[in-house]
Length: 198
Image (cartoon, rainbow, N blue to C red; front, side, top):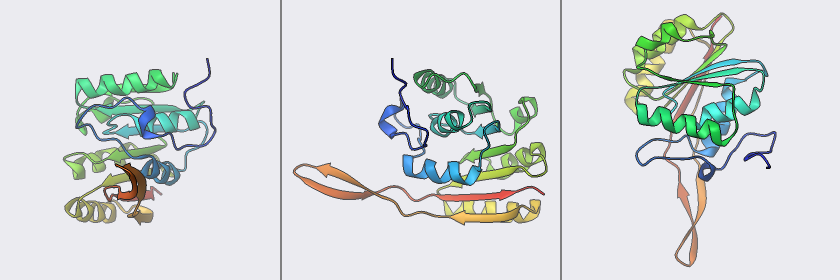
């Protein structure tokens, strides 16, 4: 049987992921930017905090076959969804943890080379505690869709002395069919912040 995603490049179509109503998925185009911001190496260890459907975790695990992804979610049903998606793509290098950040982060193993925080509340303490576990040279990527969180993240990045900070807010439109016409529909805007620990 052919693998579900046989390509070496990221960008899995959203429809290939199992999804639940109300559970966010990082859209394919946004995932491409997130994965690029992580700058993963083949043996990288990634912590995905607030993993949602697990789409970023799956993409990262496929790109890092000798690495390890630790996906953290607080809801039992969502944890099950992440596991289903990992099974769909035949991944053995993803560990799914049911836990509430930042409290559960001290127990996570192995230690990360990079961390992605996908939204989440309370965002500031999650970022602060995650930062403590990141080694020198490690990368942090955080996403948010609100202006309030953008302010919080900017202030926290400054306080933590995150280096080489990059912030992008892409404008993405997808072609969709509505009735007999094809129209462009905007994907909800999101901010992607990234940087390094020196």
